[in-house]
Length: 201
Image 1 (cartoon, rainbow, N blue to C red):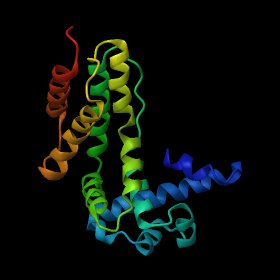
Image 2 (cartoon, helix red, strand yellow; image 1 turned 180 degrees about the horizontal axis):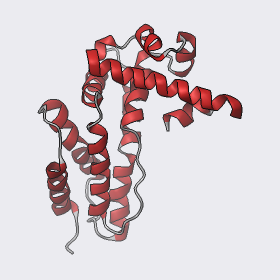
Image 3 (tube, rainbow, N blue to C red; image 1 turned 30 degrees about the vertical axis):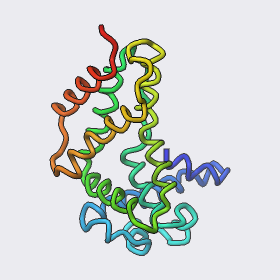
Image 4 (cartoon, rainbow, N blue to C red; image 1 turned 90 degrees about the vertical axis):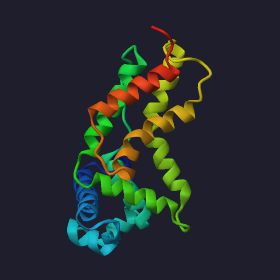
């Protein structure tokens, strides 16, 4: 999705493959630097050197380091699309399983920890982080809303709270508790959320 957003502005087909390769190289460089040295190692100079990209081209895509870090996060933990499976528990499991696989990618734990810390900085543009989070959890929200319409999620539930509980479960285990989430946690979250908001079978 990030590549699509970047390439959209060019309007010329032949240039897009190269732009997409540069985008991937830059975002991969961010993740690698964070995995090896932490968020403090991410500077425009360091990323450009690692990716073999020019700083002017990077600034055209990502005017600030914050924009670059958010794009790197979304390249690993971006928006999902889950088909209607006829059961919100199955759909919820699909979202959590996809996130679990993404979180196992080297560097993603430090990347998420860094972006959470960056979002709390006094000078951070909070709207950008909020918009990114909304994109990332959008499909989880869709699952609950679709479940309400379908009838296997109780009407009147606090969807915002339910989405927060789902999104936070794996991230808190990984970032705060310093333990990699696993399938058992996914099963427990699906069961607990299902009991809390689901309608009787």
